[in-house]
Amino acid sequence: MKAVYKRELASYFKSMIGYVFMFFIFLIVGIYFNAYNLSYAYPSMNITFNSITFVFLIIIPVLTMRVLSEERRQRTDQMLFTAPVSIEKIVCGKFFALLTVYLIPMLVICLYPLIMRQFGKISYAQNYTAILGFFLLGAANIAIGLFISSLTENQIVAAVLTFVVMFICYIMSGIESLVSSSKVTAFITFAVMILLFSIFLWFMLKNATTAVFSGIVLEAVLIILYAAKSSMFEGMLTKILEVFNIDSHFRSFINGTFDLTAILYFVSVMFIFVFLTVQSLKKRRWS
Image (tube, rainbow, N blue to C red; front, top):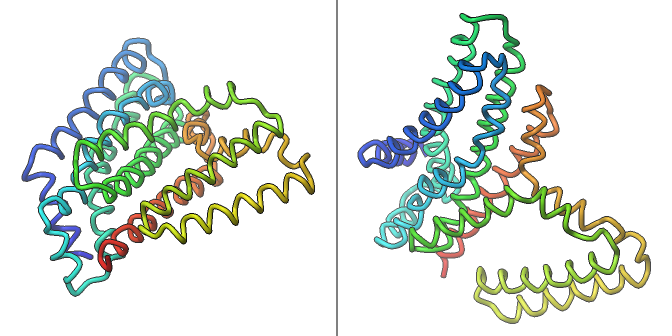
């Protein structure tokens, strides 16, 4: 894993991707930091980070689009598959390299509260909690981008798909407010989701029998549950959508709360998408 990590980390600084990524973070954070914290003497960076989460929609797809798709396009992934190292270590090496590129500007941003302290009294706990939340939000988005990059050999497609998924998560609060909480709406939505899951399963396994059988079984279970106790579907859709609302968990840190539940949520998102990336590569390895 160490060799993969070093190779991947070096590649970001041999090309312009790592520098462009850090430049945009420094640029956007610097503009808002100057506007809110220095010009208006606001003593906390929470409003700054809350205003710039959109930057991930631009920089994360650019950072992650080539991490695995480029290996697949150039057929160098075959070298990784035959290397004396497990797929898990390969994926973790690449993921930690991405995190390192992201961590470098975040460590510099950790100096910003010290700059504000020169002009007045501030709360270090509140500021560094906001920085931690911003880091975890970015790390979770990087894990999503890593997984999507493993699904295609086209970098542009990987970047666009990553943007779309992140954008949906970004506007999830608005989607929740528009979605009905009725049990009928929840039932129909879950039925459609099962259908989409079956299509995704077929795409991943290339086995129509498994995909169709899984879809039929899950749809049957859904119908049985609805017939037995339809009341359990009341408001369930909103609760499910809340799981995908990354922004709501980030707001805990913005409000100055060191939320262990939110930390567990972001770590879980990272683990799940790294795990899915491993499974995606294993499927290609044996196909």
